[in-house]
Amino acid sequence: GVEDVVINDPKSEAPYVTCVMDGAPLRIDCSYIAGCDGFHGVSRKTIPDTVREEFERVYPFGWLGILSETPPANEELIYCHSNRGFALCSMRNENLSRYYIQVPLSDKPENWSDEDFWAELKRRMPGESVRTLVTGPSIEKSIAPLRSFVTEPMSWGRLFLVGDAAHIVPPTGAKGLNLAASDVFYLKEGLIDAIIHGDPDKLDAYSDRALARIWKAMRFSWEMTTMLHRFDGEDSFAPQMRKATLDHLARSESARRDLAENYIGLPY
Image (cartoon, rainbow, N blue to C red; front, side, top):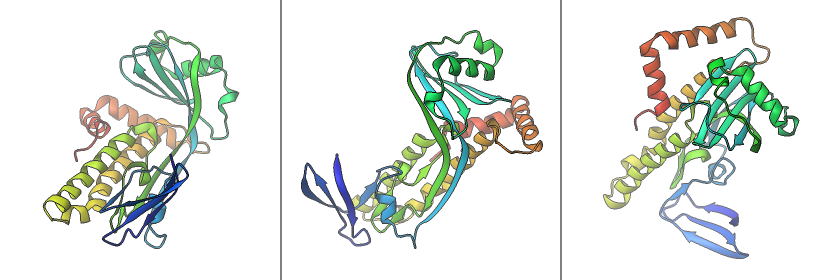
């Protein structure tokens, strides 16, 4: 609810934030600043271009998603790979479900009627799940683009980036909130040691500690996205690799353990 946010003097021992709130200027004096203002916030952009390095992979498709007041198709998530593209069946509660299908980035939600969406979803789902699928009118419909993004470093002076301000993962691996939580954990440890115990070591190491876990989650999300989606213009080798990877998961307990460890979230 504020405007014109500026982070001032983050390299000093007395950083402060200025903004306009309800039409009046406001100044907040700080010991440290946690930049938790998302991908479009001011925190990341406060770190100079000469210091900041950004890494990005934009995927050439999006997820068309709907929310419907219907029971979930299954008690667990269903990730679907098909020749027609990816689909996901997920749930919010016992009578609220969210479904997604892979679509081109050029597509628009208004191009899809509810009937068209359900018909395409069924084409991508396994037969036994189609039989238990309950359809109904959508109460929300949108297309989410997919991207992988990381900025380094995640700290500059007394400014520390947290969550989406520093990194974005495609939703395929479900790691966005998980990574934000681990950022908070590392920053909390550093701040407690610095403020209460006078030991700045963990705070100084915040960016390196957080990024080590972030890049592992990036790898997992990229791997899941590559394994489950069709890519326009790909050669005949790519779908065979997806098929082999999925078959390996189905037959190897070690592969399933590795996927489960990463999906739940690597230890802090």
